[in-house]
Length: 623
Ligand code: AMP
Image 1 (cartoon, rainbow, N blue to C red):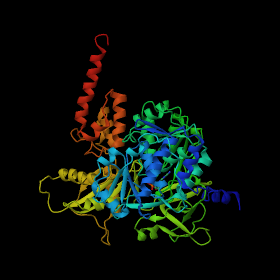
Image 2 (image 1 turned 120 degrees about the vertical axis):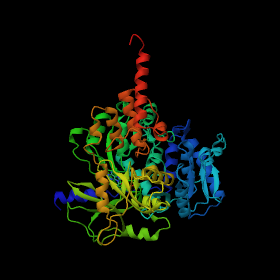
Image 3 (image 1 turned 180 degrees about the vertical axis):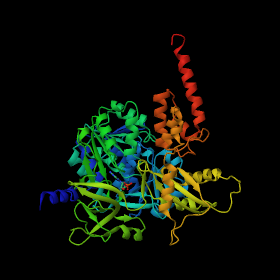
Image 4 (image 1 turned 60 degrees about the horizontal axis):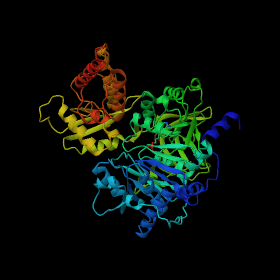
């Protein structure tokens, strides 16, 4: 084999390494805890727990779950705010030999019902505060983990661990479903332990490391954030609930707790690095990115700003968190593009054409993943499972592969990402199927037909086109009220990343010759809508506040009286605006104010003027 072909094979086939975990994640954590039972395992929510305490509380929960003899083929739901009790809840469920189903504490009642209907847990384990807000269906028992943590028991002896097989489900992670129903990926224990033990083999964390846990546990990355430190006797630092999109809070936690390892989706890393003081996070050793493409400019900024090594990881939920990696050079001038790199241990990548056959070397094709990390399928959806978990091509040495829908090419021994085959998109790191948004929007009584498309290269956005039923009863020629109604309808039912930034009402839906929605045309129209216009924000030249407003919101025109939310403002836009307002105008404004109050550009002008006047007054006569 020539050197070139050899490089390609190495990119595509991860090393075969034995990563035994006969007692699964609980067994790995127990071994680490036994080496230093009094070391701090986790800290957050005002509590600091040793390994001994984490073991004890999770053992108590496991014993309680076993006493209840729950059916083994159903997950135990977890509804918890971030903190040591959340960790004990997850670990306790695993110790009882059951998979957990993490539920978002801010999930809408509708979406929660769809998820519970599919997964059918009998029991929800949670923290006191999260369970108090429970709005799930009747008939599901609730168990508060907090009373189980009362006082150490002098007679405590660690409970027995149960053997875990590699294909035993560890958790069910729901992601967006194109047909309108979220789909639950059944993740195998062997996949997650393979990811953890590969990471440890490759990056070698030590007991001195402190890993930040900021990703909500409904996303797969939380899997390594939580368990990786715990299997090596390191410290898990839990960010306060609700702070994962707040760079100032992240920065404070990172510096206060001397965090050494941290994960960001690239769009959040961008916000973090823009925040004044990011460079003060000098204790960081490793910054991991995954979830969406990492732009080279951002990678360079990160390497220049922080002393940490930067890594770009790639992987779908369907392949146990991440399956490829690229470690950035330390010299930023050497970063001219960012590949997704090479396969991790026990994992094989195939690049296939439309017929399911391997493409020629260097050609673009669909990335298909095989090996240990492969998920077991989608819960209760054999049809969907069969469609994307397909038999591997002959001679590949694999049984099944997962068709990712991602386009890639192998160049110079590195896998490079080239976008999606379908319409799935990452909005601020969150995986969204426009079809799910359409199906929710279609339920609005005023909507006759709709299409949701993606536009915007750098920061993708969703644009909804709606053909309403009949004429607008309000007589509003632009349908502005309706747009507000559609937005509210979607926002009440779906996570915020799923809410389109623009709603456009149409008299007729453009169709192709074969009578289908002309999505190419709609995408074009959406792109035009988002593109800067000659009379757009540039017309606000000399008006830095208007320019800032337009840039943060990605607007093509400036309206003084339209509010932040109605203009499609979201949490990351709010974070950016808040940072810039503080930096350039000395104006302190909270994220809650930006996201909940109807703040307009005109209102901001008044506040910045008041802040400037306040500063002048504070400076006093001497100033
Ligand atoms: P999720 O299941 O939420 O982890 O989303 C998986 C999808 O996110 C992949 O199929 C890719 O489309 C995208 N993705 C994840 N990591 C990366 C990355 N490092 N670069 C580009 N796209 C990524």
